[in-house]
Image (tube, rainbow, N blue to C red; front, side, top):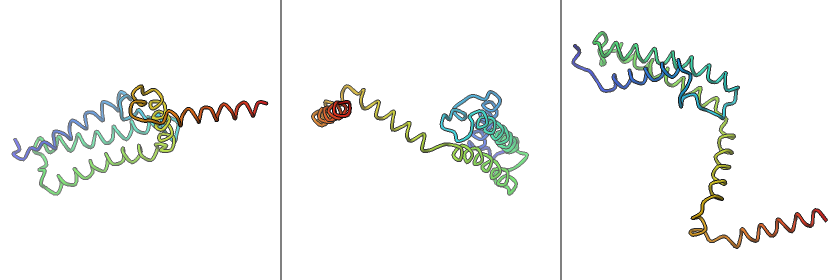
Length: 148
């Protein structure tokens, strides 16, 4: 039994198990991205492939280090760790590259504005009722003048 067992090796094995199970099922937070630049089915397919490859690499590296076949402090141990890190990086890079940031920001702003209008305590802290009332009156005047 190896003496240099580390919490990181166990974490790596658990992360690998999550990636493999999520890739097989095709469900999870990893695949829930409503703002993709490509069709969502294509995004999920590529993410599944990247996740299963990354999971397999991480699982192999973690198991090799946990069983003592490869020492964590050896050069081979560091190379295996680096390859695992690169594989995780590929998953995150693809996720970032395929996310439409402008659409996500627009949806976030829309959700914020909707929540702002619904907040019943807003009037207790923000005293702009007169401004809102004036804006509403101006809008109604414009609508009446435009229709006449």
